[in-house]
Image (cartoon, rainbow, N blue to C red; front, side, top):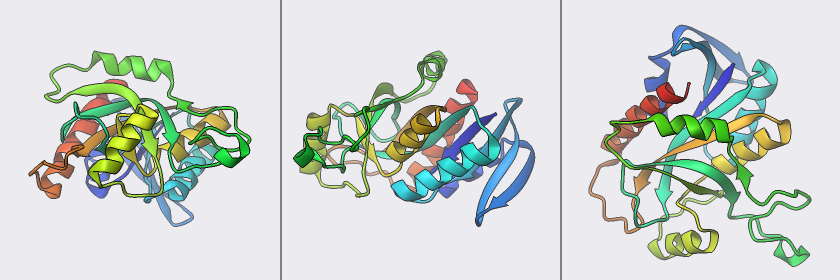
Length: 224
């Protein structure tokens, strides 16, 4: 079974409409939806904002439904001049940029007592994204950053992008990646870009969310 996590309500609704024989299962006041997506058994859930909420969601998804793969789809801010609103980043790996244990000899972003600095997505899942055509937006493969901070200032975006050689930043992916790695479950992170590195987009958020929802649904259909 495949587990799917989405970040925002609009994405959740777009995905739920595609699930056949949908059933709701409530666990700890969280709604999980089981059914068939592209004729494959899946379970879908919308996470809260931030690393703790994402970690709780991913853990319950894996432990309660015995999923073999987890795909997280959501929005992110660009850290690279090549990326524009509506483009998509496929996470090659994920680093938690707000973790700082450098005083103990760890690399910036490395979680203490963990060998991995970057959590790597499953190569097989990444390969499936290579079949996507006629998408209308760029799809780039690269590093995604995560932190419990909403990064909006241009100078900080540029600094993070250079320091970590990353394409975009969000608030959940790193936690999902860490949980999946710890529990031995394959994962893939998909992020639609909500704002450029220069913040020059004139697209309204409501318009973007609808675009992101459709983009996510198209990619999920190709992967699953």
